[in-house]
Structures are given as structure tokens and as C-alpha cells.
Image 1 (cartoon, rainbow, N blue to C red):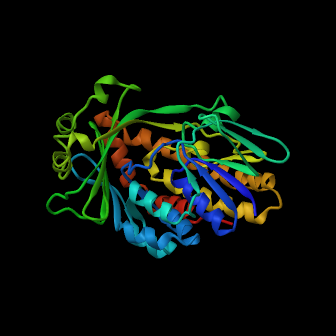
Image 2: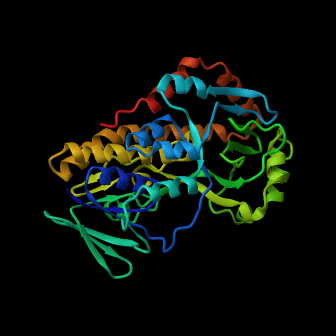
Length: 382
């Protein structure tokens, strides 16, 4: 049994703690937030993440709280189909469905599966120091903790990554995003179909959640930290997307300003090193990605299961973290880079270029999409 510290109490950190506790390790999770609040919007749990959650015995609870998708469609702003992924075909091929879930619901379920007294709140890590025996963790409140090893899952702005790789900084993707979860569905809404509309006035995504809720997002090209856009209200978004097909305007009309979450979209340019002796980077701290493939949370969940298995199958934590790095760097790099490229393609505003893009996507052979799904969903967690 090892004494393992995890920095970061997000989805990846909690999944990792659960996986390690099931192996009998003594795990502490240190989270900088002083209180747990139901934050965030919706997210997708693709087949690879569902497989991982089932692998550690918590998948069924999450499936009950989620919403099954039958299809995902990309449309133009008139509502014409550009491309479609049949989720039912995916479930037959890979043995599980694609789900959506509210981030707060997922977080609540993970906390329920955590051993008592695992999570310590208000613990903001400032520095880590390791020697041949242990890792010393220093916190902003002046306290110190010690562990046999440390897993840094403290997000895209990871303090630990900044210490180990000071040149690795978040990069701006070129577009800003509004998100919200609403509790009402418009008439004739299909709760099993997720869509993204790629238009010349921005991108608009509609993701059904359980309980007749809808998670939506809107992305506009912008300079970073644009003060004018930061002050946007729902009415401003309604005006921007007024010419888009139904139910885009209707969904915006059902949204209140108080429900809006606004962020610039950022990621990390892929790094080649996750393992640093008794310290390892994982989740967004290691490979934060833009949301264009719906794989951010999924990759953190994959990390959790792979990392736990690496520790289980290795004689030292140093060896385990090296094996983890070997297994995860190339896969996550490909996902980060592909997601970045998809975002650039989706955010095209020039009408002529958008029309050419749409035409080319319509004639892409199904085998190309199938190959990408094989890469995403056929995962070896050992």
C-alpha cells in the first residue's frame, strides 16, 4: 500500500482517487477551492470514458444520471446536414453508449464513491519538493504534507506544471465561448440528438441532458479577453444568432443572463514529459484540450484508470509514472492537436470558405469517421 497525494479535486482527480482506493492505497486529494459548489455546465461522456468508469465500478450510477445520445449532427446555419455520427452504431460496435451529463451531477456521484476524509478543501499547492524517499507538498496556508508520490491533476493552470515546466503556458484558441444549462426544452425537441451548427456568425452547440435540461454553447471568433464580448447578455447572443435555424433562437430565448458562463477557449500546446520521478502530471495539467472533440473529461478519466493500473503493475512509482507517460503522451497529443484543427475548421466565418468546407465534409467517406472512432474508443487501460 502506498501513501498517494493527488492535487486537484476535479473529475480526473476524484476518478484517480477512487481507482487507487479500490486497490487499497491510502489516498489524499487536496483541492484549492474552500467550498464544493455545483459549478459548470454539461459534458459528454463518450464510449471510452464510460468503459473506464465501468472498469472501476462506478459506471452504473453515472449512466443512471446521464442522457443517452442516438446521434450527433453538424449542421449549417440553415439547418442543413453537413455530417452525422450514429451513436447507436457506436454502441453496437464498442459495447457502450455515448452519454451526456451535467458536470455537477458527475462530480456529486464521484464524491459519493470516495472514501470518507479523502478530500481536503482550501489546500492550494504552491511548491513540491521530492527526494529519494518522499514528496513534500507545501500549501498557501503555510501547511505541509508528505506522500510516497504525487499526482498533479490541478488543471490547465497547474501550479505544479509551472514549477516543473515553466515554459508550458496555456494558449488561446482564437475564440470565446458562452455556455448555459436551461431547464426547459422547446417544442418538438429531440432529447436524444446533439447538434453543432457551424455558421458564419459563430458556432452553436445543443446538447440534451437528463431531466429535460439542455446544455448549449456558443463560440465566436474574438481577440483574447475582449471586454465588449465579456459584457454580452443573452439578448446580444439572440441578436447574433437571429438568422440561425430553429431551435437556436428559441433556446437562447429560454435562457436568463444569470445562467450564462463565459470563458475564452484555451488549451496547452502538447508537452512530451508527464513523469518527473515521484511526481506525475495528468488530466488537464498534462494535456488540456479544446472542447471540440468532447474529450477533455474523457481523457482525464482514461488517465485515472491507466495510472492506477500502472501503479498496480510496477515495482516503483517512478517506473509506474514512466510507463504512464509512455502510454499516454502520444494518444493525448493526437487528441489535443486534432481538436485544435477541428476548432479552426468549425470557426470559419468567410461564407465562401464555409461553403467549400461543408461540401468537402459531406463527401468524406464514412471510413474516415469510423477510423477516428476506432482510435478514440478502442482503449487499452492496462
